[in-house]
Length: 333
Image (tube, rainbow, N blue to C red; front, side, top):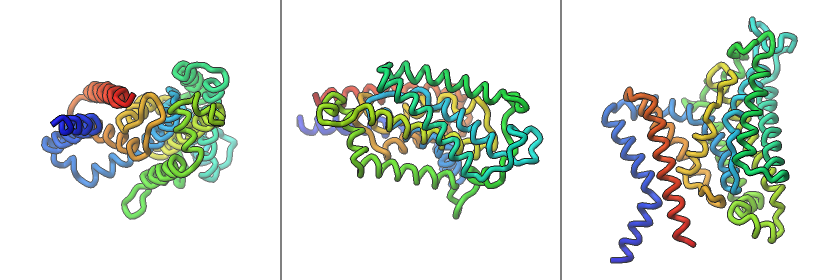
């Protein structure tokens, strides 16, 4: 009897959130059966693609035992940087009037490099200067947003939403292969690449080791500073790519892009099984967490419920997820 109760408790602890969310999705589908259509699924996957990249970057940070609150603002900055380099020469408010039309790999590469630079800045602040990650990345969030606003306000743009993108650039966010959006394919490819790095390489194992116990990792010969620098830079690269893809998806960009993306990413990671204490996390769980949140957000809007309910639902889910996480790993001590 005790064993059955114990097994039931473990099952409920591991799958309680999933059960609750499945019930919610079922309720939304009962209210509006059209929610289960292929078109809605495609829309959800497309909207989730950039969020998946941000969450994967956030996962590196959480697994390494650190935190990052700058991801959303990095998405906004890199969306503006990529968009400003991807405009046609005929656009009437071209961000860089004298700049010729660029091959599409230039804005993509620029966005990724900007993300890597911000990640390196975070890594130095946290790993070298020993600033608590929460405060360091909060400061970076403000710095990045300020830089973005100054850049976006440059004449002749003067804070006008960007547009006039090259067709080849916009096609990344709107095109598809056999009905599968390019954005979904890119997100899936990045997820597979991150899974390989996480599970099949020495770097992945060292990231888990640092997150699980940084002191033991250092004693065993792992360069903790290097690992933290790499994780922040990898996260920055994913944020940068997400920002670029967000610009292609929406056909525009502004300094307001990426607002609260980092909070959604953290929530998705926790719901997806990443431990707030570090050292635990899977790519599949994170992707599932992103999809669940986007399904719920889209579903609540789909049935006409106020968007304010989304904040309440997401907040409750985060609290429940962290409570389960704490109880789960406290039981192993």
